[in-house]
Length: 320
Image (cartoon, rainbow, N blue to C red):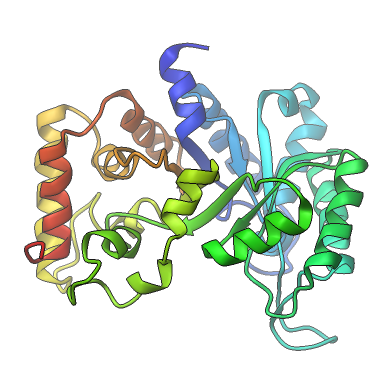
């Protein structure tokens, strides 16, 4: 693997939420499988080797797409790493929408994911959302069974804060692999929790982060940023009714992209990758051209001055 490809492999993850067609009960189509195949090949071509799933994505059809690819090309499985998530349950005959980190649900969810993916293991299992009724000992019991059976390599979380991570890590007796959180140039509360500490300028959600960022850095928990492309607001023409800060930042992203000779997506992602926490960006696109555009972000580093220029533009006001 080239140095550039190795960089992509470690810093970029392909999010698979958009694969498998609609969020409906329609059967998987050949077009759905072809779309997944094109996205996977584009990602592998630029060195992206980790693929992010969840048991709920397109009601299981995103995982089914990969299962079909593995059936048709068994050698493909060895070329990539899989992670999937569990805990979100939609309303059904048994109850309302809920989060479920009971041992029974975790074990059943992993078994169903493995069957859909047509594989005997996944590298990482992420607990998708925190369940207020989670019992640490019960979670640990499920984890021990999965790990002993070789069905999952490591355990991580998503959308959880430092105290929740400490509790889960203590229960299973090992460090967590990752925490997947919404982080981007648009979603900046993770930065504001530090830069605006002891000041009233921080975004409303900043205080909820507490020491989560520092905890992950100190404990070697990989930070995976979902929503990393900021919903595409900065990588294309900003909507006419967008806030002034969004429009100004979109223009600045375009200017920097032209100066660097890279895509706008690369600039938006490079802002995330510049942070010393070693953030891994989850790319939520299945379009081969956009996947390749995103990969440009790993080949160079934003200057401190350009990083702050983007940050200040997105904030729309000076720092404290």
